[in-house]
Image 1 (tube, rainbow, N blue to C red):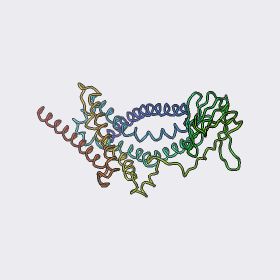
Image 2: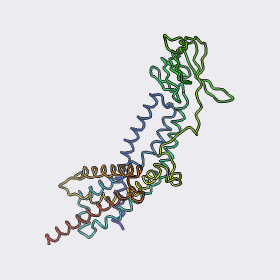
Image 3: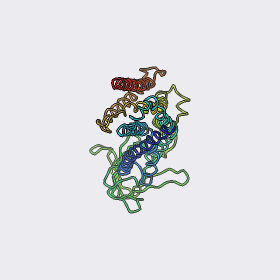
Image 4: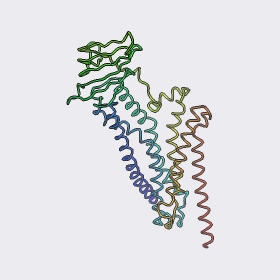
Length: 362
């Protein structure tokens, strides 16, 4: 139908505009976060764009529902402002028929949401966390920021360097506090660099021309030892030592082990947001209804408040599911029922008002 195609086109155009703006905002925040990690020395500078790319995929599931909700709301509000939908209603194209193109857009975006929440986003989270944890477990000279303390991997202690050479392979005027075997040792050296054994791959932080302070001043075991070279063994990172957040666990793994703590809630969370996209699309229909006197953004504030309430309810329901306060059969699905009931209730109420006004006019 020509009218349906026209409405779908208008909603998609506005949706992609809102989606682009929200993605730019989220991407800017993500990029700032990655550069702050470089400044802290927790990641390497050459991995910023890699982490930015994979973590950008994780923001899409949070953006798509809001973009769809606002896109449909703004598109239909504009059509009401221009009296296009008002004319269509007078010709018999009422709110219930308007649901057909809205459902088409909502179902299309629900598929996109499902692909990201169930597959792409967990994969991206896994890759990003894996890369960050591997870098955190292996000290890189490049990760040391001159003039700032940097934690050594595996809780070995901290290191401080006054300056670093141009190719970022050696630091100078080094101070380190090392905890090994239940003892703390202070090390002061002129320079330090990384070395690794070819046979075993074991990495060492090698300090040169310095002093080692052992024990506590004033006690009999206190000693100052001068050295030309002193190596600190850095434990190699391994896949088995890396733990991941639930968001990085694959959906297949969540499905296989639903009884593990938090797995059931995470699985329902991913599926629930794909369904919630359709519910939000339907809710946007009655909220978009406005008149030229109200202005295009007359109900935008109310719609945004409702979205925040729904989002908070989803988080509360997830917490209840994780703690066992509600049964898995109820889970997060009761929120969808509330949203759909509100949407259809508002549509019926608005349609009743429209018919009463039409009857008085006759």
